[in-house]
Image (cartoon, rainbow, N blue to C red):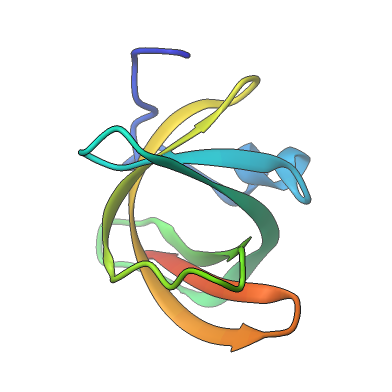
Length: 103
């Protein structure tokens, strides 16, 4: 597992797109883990006051668990570690969907 977190300030859609449909390990403060899959990277049609292009990402987790909205550490062996605020936004037979917005 990589120790360094990726800077969210510098993160762009192009950094995440290669990891579509890839698993990320979500680590909780108590040491337990869950698997999420990156399902979508969506550009939004505006640029923030800081000059950043806004975008969102969607992850899919298992159906049995609904994580509360919070900041979670997500690890991918090739990409590294992201600490992002995830919000549960839906549930289906496929699993629970989570969104993180970058603006």
